[in-house]
Length: 123
Image 1 (cartoon, rainbow, N blue to C red):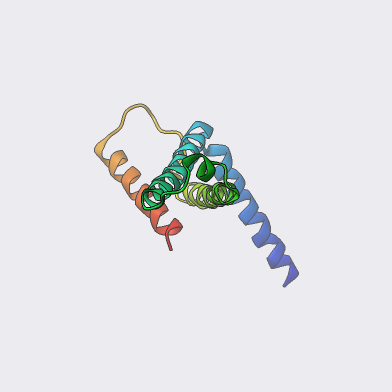
Image 2 (image 1 turned 135 degrees about the vertical axis):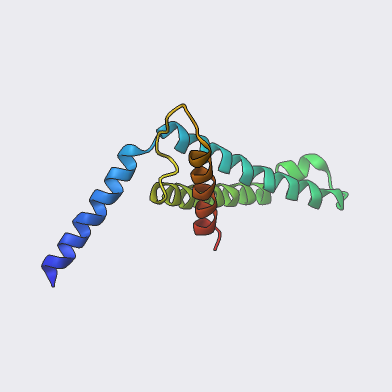
């Protein structure tokens, strides 16, 4: 039924809107920066490990077209990871503002939120 589909679509958009309004932007940006650093650090470690076995000119290796391709691929990977992580965080409310007082229950819930984000992002 078309009416039911419209209701479902409105409900989903209001659900997403509420989660976005409740999210702390600083937490989202912090996690996005962390994910980007992780992806580029992973690429850097891989590139250094690959270059250890080669005897090419180091400057030529730094200026190669392959480096540009690899860096843009890493940026793409970081963008996908950030998108999935942010979506998972919005769904499980891990970006919502918390009170300064942290109880053991709150800490336990935070750990569960992070674990559920990892499970949602990693398949």
